[in-house]
Length: 95
Length: 403
Image 1 (cartoon, chains in turn red, purple):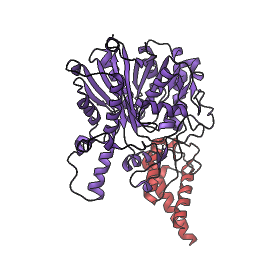
Image 2 (spheres, each protein chain N blue to C red; image 1 turned 90 degrees about the horizontal axis):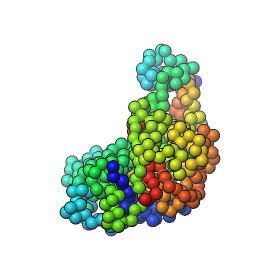
Image 3 (cartoon, rainbow over the protein chains, first blue to last red; image 1 turned 180 degrees about the vertical axis):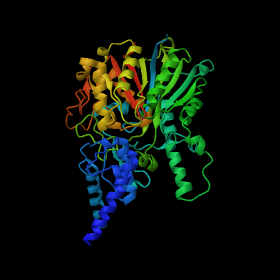
Image 4 (cartoon, chains in turn brown, purple; image 1 turned 45 degrees about the vertical axis):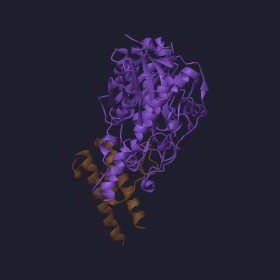
């Protein structure tokens, strides 16, 4: 059970990283959990496309509004933060 | 060059079914935003908008005509009828070729597209109504206005997203001023509050789920509306010769392109458009008594528009009343600046400035007098109306009190 969750989370991290890499026109191996989207050259439109990619990939609905920069509902401060948020959304959906 | 005046105004929008109703609602600070009633609304994540309520098309159009008219055309025709009636113009054989129409719309017959895609894709039907094309085309409204009133001069449609109506009215202004026509019907309309229209906007993540609160610190995005307004722009000498009542003078028009980002607002483009409009009107920035802002209620637009206003108006920027009537009628996309010009007319003619409603707290990054929540009495001799479109296309009109 614990192992499954870990495998699921590896899968989530991989997919989220791939989506972000695709948007940044970078190789996924060049992206770390500490990477910040702005530093990867992803602007607000790119972010909206990432969110869309995540929703499509995991069948979830991301609470994201471009008008609230602090994004209380969905932490976008780093790639790792986004992965953690997606893990929560996927877990909540499975529950 | 000729001077250009407004001799008629008409509207159908979420605040009212004519100009007096709209003025009354603006003065009361009415917010027309409510729950949407379109098909499949339960599948929308954004379920609010400013709809025109209580509008019965069959009361205005014969049944056999109605099958040719998308909602955005119905709105334009009703507004044009009111404007023509107020102007008192008779379009005879001599004036017909000297009269034209330029209207703005962003989505054109969006509802017709949505309905008929539903028919062929969702319902699996292989046949659509024969008039789908003449209903959905962006020039349908302008064409029907020309047909109804016999306007045989220049006629076309301008489509520049959220600045469509201002670009259209600017072109009509140029047309009359330059002598290409004596009379132009102009403005814009939009009817995009259908499932597909809202669904497309949802994707951008800029729509509010609660309400439209421009310039407020807690603003949460834009809210769509539907409707439009149409004006009669007329050569001043022509209007005076026939003893027409003059509602206001169109004093200047300025436009610019950001040539930057496809959706992110820019400061420089709007500054150049506002400066161009004031230069065209031969007015110094300190002559502006009221600004109807673009004021969409998104985080980015409102902050950057405030910066642009400071650059354009200088020291006066913090003092001049700047309001966003979108807080009341929503964002009518291609028709919005036509309805917003009504707020400028109201300020010039009735001495009442439309408020920015739903305002809860100041944003430290926005040092403007946004006329929060309550309409204000003020003498206004010069009003400026901003429209800054997606795609970075900006259009600004300046009106002056009737000569």
